[in-house]
Image (cartoon, rainbow, N blue to C red; front, side, top):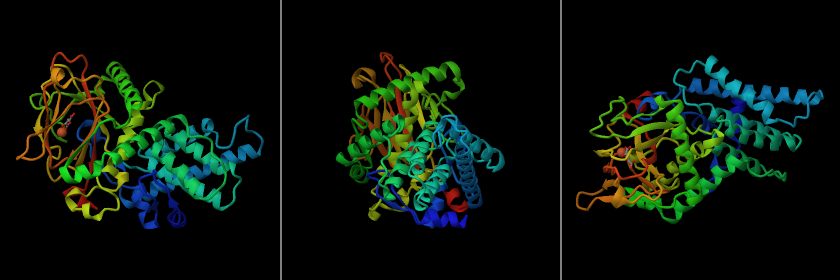
Length: 434
Ligand SMILES: O=C(O)CCC(=O)C(=O)O
Ligand SMILES: [Fe+2]
């Protein structure tokens, strides 16, 4: 394990373009792979981050590193024995089921009661792949090996075993290792993720979302993903909702007031579903993709990574890898009363620090349909009304900006749909526990 830490620690891992390059020291290894897990409480109510103990993290990392190594050795032996049956090196069709089994084995053997998030294995598995990648390049393995590892990560992302961002980062790591080998183009879904994430980052940059947040406490970003991506995401969300409504209606539940799960239709009368980012069935893959894009990019908009002036404790967020609260899909049906004035952060034990809401509603007419988000940013100023139009992203500090959702007119011809993500920070109890 120490060897693994040293090996990984020496590697400069690229991050998403625009996110700044990060040098992963061995001390930072744990923050790469830890604090990323979400309890199943989040499926019932407010999303909450939880952390694993350090020995649990190391056990998980060891499990995936050893497991992946043995899968690779097994595959190499099969190929060498000539029993490949037409398979290529690390053929996803043969390797993905083995990796999926590794995840199941981890759930059974590691005894991590807190681990319920579908993508809980993502940071461990992607660290294991990165390790293999570095090993392959540094030991001058045949060039097909690193290339196969990059493609395998993309297949893992398609199979909800790692995040798409892991796949993009693995490719950047590969490029940073100085090999001249050409990689095949990004896989289809990873390419969609990448294009959406790039668009969101560059729109946020050009509209100075960070500056607005720091100055005004909120930011509004129209055309956040671009109309083509927004349309395909919104269509996919509609199909997903219909599918869930028919096949798993218990996933749709009344929006709650706080993490206790209490609901009160007089205060809010929407219906919500929690998205994990693994909603990748062929018919609605963009649901998982857009969820992963929001969860990946929104934290980086909270402040500039190099800007220490903004690093005040009140706004301190957990490390990026820990922002994996589920995303909340909310639907206010025509005729709903909305959501009464409130702060999202309900108290010192609520981890939410930054709220981001992305709207999916086509042709929303604020006057005719209502459903405004109203932000009460400053008692001396008029409140800010935001119409929930498709492809608008709104960000505000969860503990500073009181807000409400106004009634949705019964003339609206579709429910008012939004996806919300929260960036989390330490709470009184998590700070004491760590
Ligand atoms: O959908 C919106 O515009 C905001 C909803 C909201 O305030 C919440 O879910 O906490
Ligand atoms: Fe709210």
